Length: 180
Ligand code: IMP
Ligand code: MG
Image (cartoon, rainbow, N blue to C red):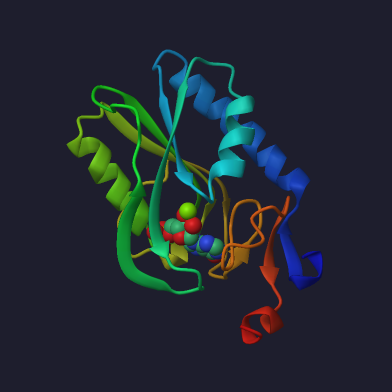
């Protein structure tokens, strides 16, 4: 798996340092807010787990799955709710955890969904932010790194469902795409 990576953008150490900084910020802001942390499956799971372990505050955790990409590197423009929350967000301070915000389509959908369901507040913490990919006007209140407009894998990010378990974020060798 490591042989398929052309370059490492953020090492495991870089990522954990960024998460420590984010956790401190978020924990301070949400100390008395009883947040509901909503992790977006499957990409945000690694980030969410590392983040919440570093937050010494009372918080609840739930998961949602929305799909925009269907296995490849290009978005289809289509969006589907695949797995819903089990928690009622009415009156709650929702904190969405994402692996990456690219076009912003997923985030726009989720923020609207939670607001329509009566959430008191909805904010987002994302490990990565790809502003050049933005097509929807969404706010990313907290993020770890601003990334270039490249297709990335690792630490939750996948190509055709693989590479999520890399402990770092990197760029795939072009040969990996051409083989498929
Ligand atoms: P958006 O809706 O376009 O903002 O994209 C959100 C989702 O697309 C993310 O949660 C990722 O799962 C996926 N995604 C966006 N960019 C990348 C990438 O560079 N590599 C892998 N997945 C990506
Ligand atoms: Mg995702």
